[in-house]
Image (cartoon, rainbow, N blue to C red; front, side, top):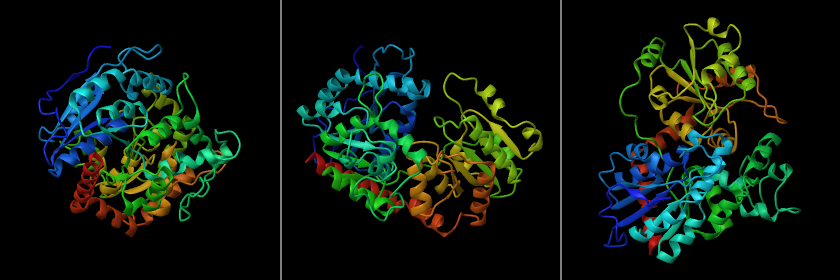
Length: 479
């Protein structure tokens, strides 16, 4: 396995040292959808001059990218490399979910479990005040506690997700401990009565059942998270009371633990310039007229769904850029050709582009011609689109995305959901077209509520308050 390597950490020992000093170790799961919020939080903490130092743990192959994410923290953050042990079935060199299949992501949890001796050695050497850890590693608490290090579980998901799916009340359901699809179609006992999520459609409930499934003899996601909740000293959630107050209160009551909130971490403006080919194409259209459809790097549409999406975009007669990605190991260009309706590219020539692969999402969202963002309701994507000034059309595909869409569209009145068939989640081209028409009918900025929340998220004083209060909470936790 080897010992953990690290960037220089000469100042890391004795983290509980002087007054005002706080040393935090961050240990996210090896998925960039988890790593990125941890890194963004580290940058925010450094930005308020709170006297906080961060040591960030990740697999060795991820270190350069993590260091780039942490750039600009004024030397207050360092990265320690963990060497992943070999796990049968896990591809050689795979050190994040971006490089593996869905089954590989499950095996990656086994590899992370195998880093326990390295993490224990690092915590013993660094002796930080607090370790922020992720859902997959409840054993971090067992390592930290004998060292006098406080351990806080950091959820990168909205509070509504933890409240609906992960609540301890799920264990109090009658019958076998594993809930059925019917059980998961109803909110848990004591769930906030003001929520529009008293029930969810069957297709969403069926998707939630994944968290109760065991793979390769490992604990299921629910059991891992429950172990984290039971053992940790505090819960940390990437949200705020203004947006999710009832869900935060419910989680605090269910778990009987302190709950600290970081605020909805708003991305910093992107660096550099938009690639010339995209800038030139986008600049050929009027302001706020282009639809940008993108579903992130790890959310994949079934072929039939992608086809309906493209036909719906065509039916709007609006210019559009659609980015569709595919699971690791597939021929992405070939898959894109398969799902493209016959004749579509010719019919939309000049106003529609189909693309697969990474794009500069924040740059594109902030381009003057982009007026609407069709997305999968990933929490970070929704916030990015909102602060960029785009109308939002929400088309969730799995898990917490369904709950995020309900939170934003039905509670915060931000965005338009694509209508779906209740029994199986099917949507057609007309549903996409109609959602886009409704979004554009709301005005240039998507309507009054979107403007209100955009101003709230972009208020620098509010963002700095969130971070200061969070850091104060960590100081109270360390005692």
